[in-house]
Image (tube, rainbow, N blue to C red; front, top):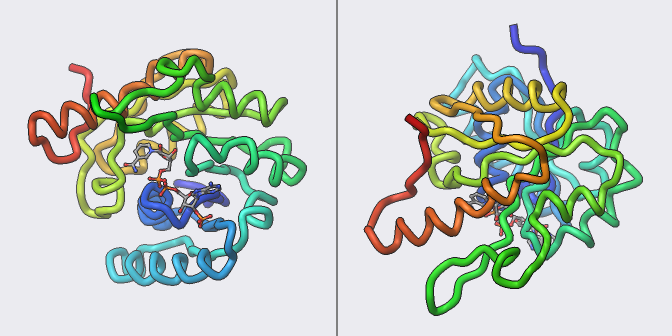
Length: 227
Ligand SMILES: NC(=O)c1ccc[n+]([C@@H]2O[C@H](COP(=O)([O-])OP(=O)(O)OC[C@H]3O[C@@H](n4cnc5c(N)ncnc54)[C@H](OP(=O)(O)O)[C@@H]3O)[C@@H](O)[C@H]2O)c1
């Protein structure tokens, strides 16, 4: 039996945050965080309506909204579903609140678009990977990175099987196993361990690669599956 976890999503008002909330509320309690508490409360209400109309009485969890700082307190799992550029400011705001045993998840991709297409800015501008930057800003925490090659459109569609793999990077075995349990609760999603958090750039770079392939070949929200 799945035990109910407290999952907090900083930046939960964005597309990925909505997808995580809708997929996991069937079994877990979700808190949506925003820089603006009212925006989070409104998003949480909308997500709750969508989830209830899909899961009905099978739904064990709830979705509520609050500001990012309150959201970071007392969660088992804390997802930082925010842009790369906002990592430092967000970490500065929440770092004192995070529980010692909390697992921090990063789907963050340092990416931009230029004349050539989508690029991975850590390579282009010699900057840190998202996971590296997070680890520097949240020392002594358990960080796992994953979900980089998952499209928000597919994630938000509760009934769609993702039929994909997601690469997982981290240094804490217990944290990786807990995240793997959550990943397999998402229909059609398989976790594949890639290695240490320092290898996260190999997973992060897949997002601009997928977006370029998608645009140039007219593919809708492609994912990755190893065969
Ligand atoms: N979208 C995808 O398909 C996809 C796929 C794989 C990975 N990712 C990665 O996953 C992360 C989340 O993706 P997303 O598309 O949901 O992102 P997003 O919509 O761009 O942003 C998510 C939330 O972050 C908050 N935010 C925006 N700018 C901010 C700032 N300057 N400082 C602090 N918070 C800020 C906003 O929430 P509030 O305004 O409510 O605070 C926003 O709703 C990103 O790093 C992205 O690269 C996305």
